[in-house]
Length: 323
Ligand code: URA
Image (cartoon, rainbow, N blue to C red; front, side):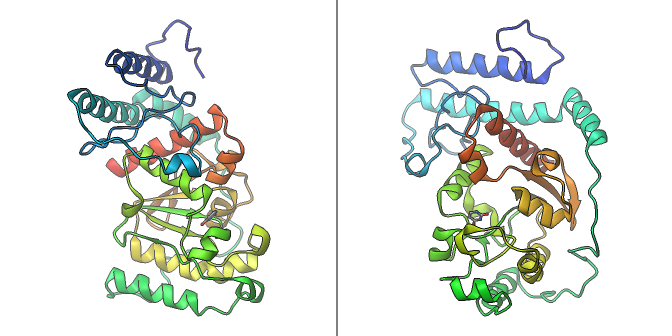
């Protein structure tokens, strides 16, 4: 990462981004408001709750259960409207930076170095397989999957221990699909994906690219909680695969974000680790799949570096959604 105090290099998009962030922070502070969160560092400014105002900054400091429940202030003054506009511009600039010639050059050279995905066997998600839900309205097709998941008997240990099945939820028209590993305790109790601490950070991640949970879809590799939050076995993942495959076929999302190594490895059929896989797109069932760190990993490793990597991945996703 560039030295924030060093000589600006006009060819370096990161330095340009930092310069913009500093400029914006100074402007906001000049207006008597809290400063803009520096990339991957400071506490973020909550974007005022004004029409179309996106959230700003990096993955937020203190994005914990308590943080997620903080009320946002109502939009009251001209300064807040200006701050919202500045936040919107800043998000657009960050996204543009991910598309700049310098950034794409960096991206393509990274892609050249990126490991090939090692396909282990038959494709998991065979687009030529019969489309069970063809011709059925999305809402109905998704509801059918929910009912089938609820009745699924395939994994004896998971069935014996589950409180509720967690099929996944969100907009039937979502362009962005998040796929995690499997439900935890909170999810098992509520029957909803990503509603615990990791889920609250996921909400912040979604909001950081000016979206809401209502407009995305959130699912998991397995739809029943593995006891003690252990990783799902390959057999359990294989049992759940047809449900997830059908959800993807119904949603036809533009972008899929695989949250964590288990999700990325299962989807891409690779043993490569998340650190190698993250940060670039892989073609997947007509969508572009971006692996990133799992929110629970981010909470355990709450460093500027990890937060910045996840935010960079999210900005690439946002740019792809807008392309
Ligand atoms: N972790 C996951 O991978 N999925 C959830 O739904 C919750 C936590």
